[in-house]
Length: 236
Image 1 (spheres, rainbow, N blue to C red):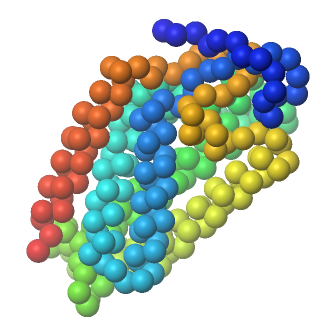
Image 2 (image 1 turned 30 degrees about the vertical axis):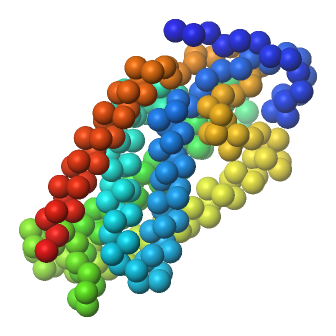
């Protein structure tokens, strides 16, 4: 497993001294992150404009991405695994008091982890309800005929109203948090999600991000995409 290597000073994240460059976000996680961000924006846009065919197509992409992330959360790079950012209430309290272990600032912080789990949970709910929704005009999900009319009605109300507003609120909160960390805490969250690396003042375990891991991620995503395609084929 590769070890972090030293770099010279000059990074905004650090107050002083030499830095350790650590691979925190593996390439599959970074690609997932930006692909999901674009897909969610696409979903919001097509939903508001009523471009339903593209809304469905992007929805199947979101389904593929979410399935991939759920699996990658168990076999991906160290800091991408759910086990690395599933924290107890006591850990969260310690973090808020500024008494947390330095490792809690390497990957997702306890607060960041809550944001990630909330986003994943509500996106899963949004996709699931979309699959069984019916606008009673021209668009219905591929699984509507497999559930009761009452379920379709409830899912449609959630998907088109409550769920959509919750997702929009989470997106806005995510952007505000990024701006806050840059402006107030002088911590850059976007740059590591582009390069994959963070510059730390202490050693930390790097994430596995070699050719083997990337090939595994590609295979997993291909299987998830194939499943989403099969789901889409059920639409009549």
